[in-house]
Image (tube, rainbow, N blue to C red; front, side, top):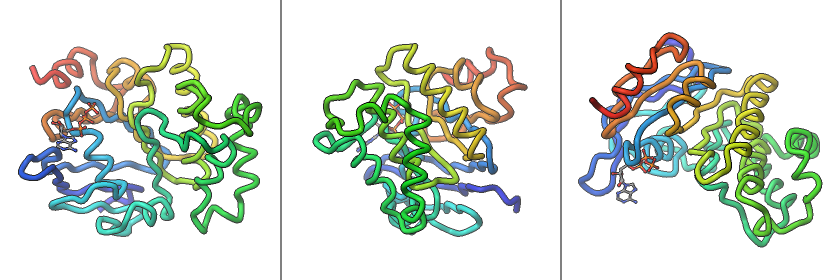
Length: 238
Ligand code: ATP
């Protein structure tokens, strides 16, 4: 067995009788950016929610840093260093930007460095520093997404999952957020899993990719070695 940071083995999950994640295997190495690509309803969110402890698997295992975390609740998984940035930049609307960020440092391992980590988040997202006392509900979609990323960073994760961060945002904002993700990966050596529907962007920013269709990983490999036609065919299942 390799010493991958995250390893998913034969994972199954669903809703009642419906199988949304069907025998998925996946490995994420330390410092790697993995793009998880697939059309609407392919099972990407269910897979990642199952990995992050937000959804119970029906079979299979998830290992993180060599430890079996399959049965752990989501908050314990965050403590281990695996954080998920949910779709739509979900924030506590009435709380200030800063309080939203501090909510991310509730894990014991991150609490003692919370002050430095907060400075780091403000350095990465200077806009947030300007509006730290503002209620998160008053921010734009892009700014809320930054708060959600900042909150996940506050837990000092070794691996971050981004669930379709580009959804509903303007191209310039998406480019900006992707630049920050590249910095997080380069400067903190954080492993990144990007759930994306934009094949071209996903291929460009990732080291490896996985295409999901009807609950299964139908194609995976090195992003630099796959031609876009093959990628597109697997994406649409043609
Ligand atoms: P999207 O890009 O639209 O977010 P996805 O690839 O992330 O799609 P999932 O959201 O994981 O896919 O959905 C996988 C399948 O599970 C879909 O057929 C969806 O309709 C179904 N599904 C998702 N959530 C539920 C739920 N709460 N109850 C029942 N079925 C669900």
